[in-house]
Image 1 (cartoon, one colour):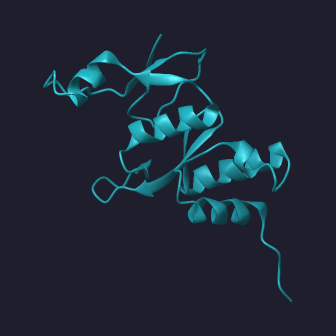
Image 2 (cartoon, rainbow, N blue to C red; image 1 turned 90 degrees about the horizontal axis):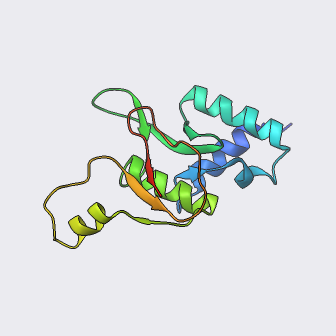
Length: 138
């Protein structure tokens, strides 16, 4: 007799199969169960190290660093890329800051250290991976 998958296993399966994004919100799993059960399953996945909580209702796929052994965001450009994906997923209008534009266009040699974006709409959440935090300009 075959046992059906638990909600945690269903969510974990969907996270591993999804290739186009590294960031997830509870709304992505609304078709699987109710909001409370989805949040409980996401908390278990964070505890197990499959996901990393970036902020209120924002989770990212996690991998373990080979150097330090700590969990880190499994995104091509690290936390900055995951934060941009989260803003897009939350529907926040944003643009690059002037310092980032200057660096990308070759007008400056200073590399922007902290991930910073300029938001055009209201946004009050904090996005962080434990080491870096997204800085928001208005």
